[in-house]
Image 1 (spheres, one colour):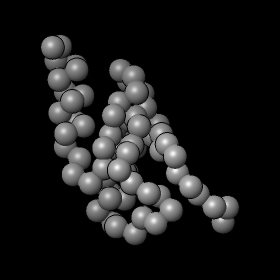
Image 2 (tube, helix red, strand yellow):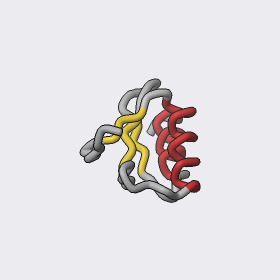
Image 3 (cartoon, one colour):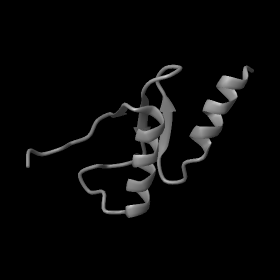
Length: 68
């Protein structure tokens, strides 16, 4: 296993409340384990912000969001 892949897996394991799976080597990640429509937990928001800082682009699949 290459050191780059190992470091990506270590970063994924560092999240406690959400799952973060890198989409490519340098840009983007898919976030799971969160319902954005009902999210009120500051700790989860902090992890989402950290994932955004680390990956620049985040994908949240199957989110039933209503227009504001």
